[in-house]
Image (cartoon, rainbow, N blue to C red; front, side, top):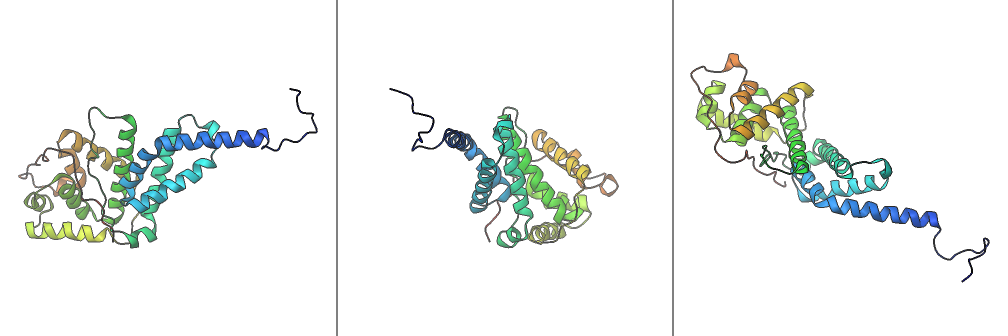
Length: 244
């Protein structure tokens, strides 16, 4: 069969267009290979299915318009993009009004044998949740909320730490939960956030809460007679975010 003459036009798409379509097909295959994990990342941060799906759709749109040939690790790139977009969602006023923003910190502690990507997901979700708590809660409410909801602290122990009654300790935790639905936020110092994430992870992985307690409640406010109880066995847990 003779080759087509140079001035003969093929009815099919041009080689360049075909190459572009092939590249997009490859991009889709890569994205679908990571999609289930990306959804888990988004859901842990956003806290509801619809919001997580919106994040994933936006990540796909960005992935299409990315210079993918320059991306050495697509999985890491997509995870980072998903995390950043999900954090933007929980910081938006629209999301605050549509959902109860009690963060989901369940099962985010360190585990001896775990997939590196799953580890990165958990760290990203933990960082986002703690940043939101720091931005919206006063120091007393932050301490009470993290210790009670994250590690099962008894109200009597919280009362000793905060130098209040057990009844008032319950009130502080309740008010912290209510405060999370507020639009008002304060800036979160980067170093303070880093220290809290590190202390939380250490407490979750070892069961020793001394470092976390000292960070949440400065030494000059602690009762020397009140020992720091160890957390119950199992991962730290906070209730999942509820739909409004």
